[in-house]
Image (cartoon, rainbow, N blue to C red; front, top):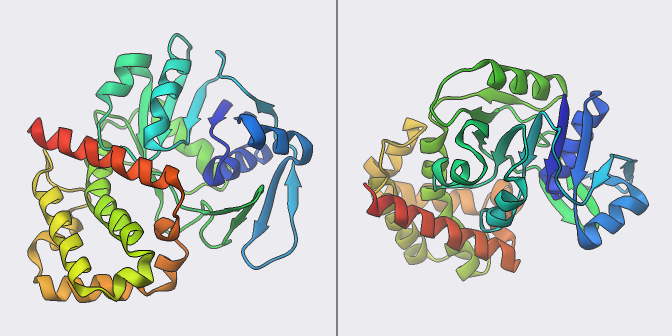
Length: 290
């Protein structure tokens, strides 16, 4: 399969390496300083806590082009507009693997509805300068599979081909229905969590402020109640139905856990804040359109 990986951050870099080493015809799209570093050193990978760096010379490009069977887009939600413009008029399927709460329609309106597939992003590590640092147990092979699906929820031959290619490359993927609802549900929970952690100065600081955690939980509940369809997975109904005091205690325990510490909740970069705000806008638009 000929694949363009659009975005050379943590997950994009790991995707490109896995697919390249599995024998696919892969190009990794990057620009600016990231592209210059990749041209000098290749994709640099290191397991968390290790000083050993592995360098993989993945083929590179600085612009999309036609002829790819699949373009996997791994950028932030607020960066999608320019990506869509650059992919309009080209051929091949496009899998959007990023946080997104606006549904498939605005994507297809630019590049063609028949080209769009949706997926849930996978957190896999951090950037340490130009080195991708990842925990071996988490990097694309986590027990919880990365969900990939058709906007209409069907299980199609192209979806099966993509999932099979990913799994053969060691990327744990699973064909999943109702991807629109899954992505909106994730945003309804993740946006209040991310914004509250940023405002508090990190997850541990947020855990120490019971009132802030309670306010965050109430916003999660409002977001879930405003969704145009039931949450996916249905387990998120528990956020709406379990007692507030119990959920506040559970959230505070999570915020103090190593999982929270090593997640994007500690990311203070402006791009993180811009993405959260874009997702919040999309949730508000979806609620108005109910």
